Image (spheres, rainbow, N blue to C red):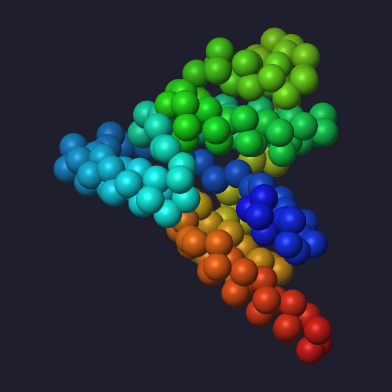
Length: 179
């Protein structure tokens, strides 16, 4: 995304999408095995194609606390920095971003005073913002992450090469110029 932001005038909004919501049924062992196998392929591809060494955190955790704190960070002008910190912690440092101590570290790392996390979780505003994002995702038809929407109408599902995003952006620009 950083490369695209440098090349195009983009207005990026990170939205919440809940992984393993509370109350989700247990993950079948065969599915976990399939995910783990796919992770190996993903890691190899990331290294070969982008020179990135993936060292991802655990699979199957509840991401809601991280999402609520991202809304708190956004409200305090540090949403993007928090998002990037948490993303890096999970994908490159194998951190468990469902742990509250890790999330408190994220807030501190981006320059936010770390109040009692229970106070943030008790504020219905952040919870409502997460719920609104999730509802929007369902309405649009998003069923997993990553998912990227351009101009409110072009959906790119999954991790894609930068050139795919460039093609979509060029199409959006052309369509907007024609309107």
